[in-house]
Image (cartoon, rainbow, N blue to C red; front, side, top):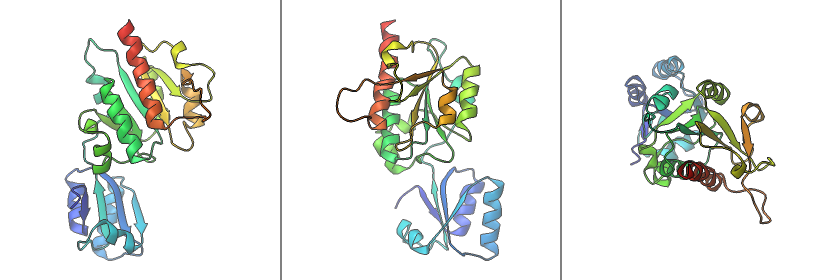
Length: 244
């Protein structure tokens, strides 16, 4: 059985009240009753978004008596942005990764693996449009997600501004830039932003970035997979820092 699945009205309510972090909460479409109403009120207080789905989806998630409720809980404990910044050792230059809409679990896990190998101090993702930390993403990360701090934020834009106020240079990886990653100084405090698989980095976030950098491509295709692109960008930071 998937250890990240909790089902049944009371077990899900207990998971929420105990502080377990809910990735997804599915409720049978049209479900009612006092217990269900109480659960919905609890979700509202804890700002947990409910997704109403057909009962067939719930049946696919678990063979148990789900009572119309199935929750996917996080495999890790998320941290706050301040926790990431406070944990940076004094003799190291801050280095974080921001994921603006990366929703594919394998890409997320692959980026986490590269980030941990590159010595990044944390990963920042959006509360809404982001891949969950579950058994599959943990596997794709080769365990990196249990080692590198992950922060989920309500607004990537506000987080970018907060990091800039802390002295970070915000660097967007985008194939639309004419400036190559080799031509930028990445030796100071830096946050590398990777965009979604389909739309890239949102225009609102892109406007705030200090740098927009491209990876040189010489083949016929116009872009790399986001996980591969992230690895290249992250290790350019490593190359520049080791060289200094």
